[in-house]
Length: 379
Image (cartoon, rainbow, N blue to C red; front, side, top):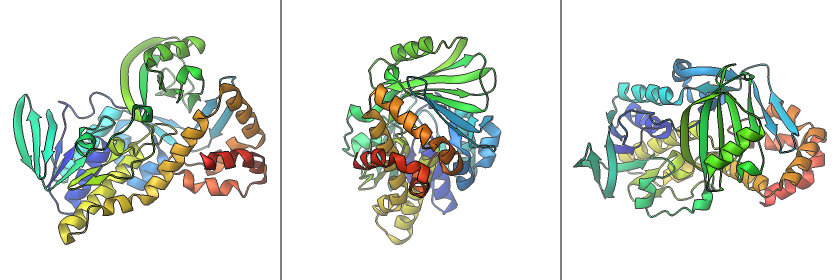
């Protein structure tokens, strides 16, 4: 049996895949309700949904369909990426997690709520269930327990605080363009950005993440500067990993997946789609281990392609963070002349930058950005 620590998308994807391949899994979720508290903005790519085959779960929890994004520098320079068709979905994240949990349970997985993992000793998992200590026997443990992963600490993997940003988000009632997400770069969001993601014309998720240490103050500066007014409700706050994806995600009989393994896009903070891919790769490695005694380390090899894209996202984040506000403004002007918005509208992929970065070299309009491209590659 495999014990999956955490009932988020990565862990639930791993549990369902294991059951489908004939192996028992138990999901340990410390909270009383899957998906509560809400973990993120709930913005996922349509291409990722199609690749994972999770359209049913998305349709059950869908709030809005987006056709693109508008990205603003501090001085209001803008890059617009848009298509005529849907490129991203805004979902009810808590309901989405619960839909994934129902699918995992239907496949045969056991879900244990209010069960927090305390420690692991070989094949013994020590947990606390409603205040009482219990023991669970499992041959393999998958740590899909988020950014502040206890499994990762038990494995002895240390990650510095500089590899995280703290996010704060509020649902706001007002008037919004329902077709576009908006991203704002500026010193009020040191090390990251602020965002507006519309649920509809009258409600949006407004948030900010930064490394400043006082994200609530940063958020207030942002909404005051942008004159965002309206009734606020449904606040959430979380830690987002923005470091390089972990190279070592396996130790003995323990594996990491999702946010716990830094399998998040450092450029945007999103992790649902790639985390679910990782969960499935993890389950396949466990299947091979159970079936033919293949090393669990094969999971790390299986994540090579995924990690290539994650490292590109990390390089994008490092590159942006190396620039001042004035340099970002200048870069946006150059990107406008190079028709970057048009290029991304045609070729861009929210999850897999490796699919379009090479194509940029075939566009003469993009050649003017070659010096910046070389700097990006050297970060």
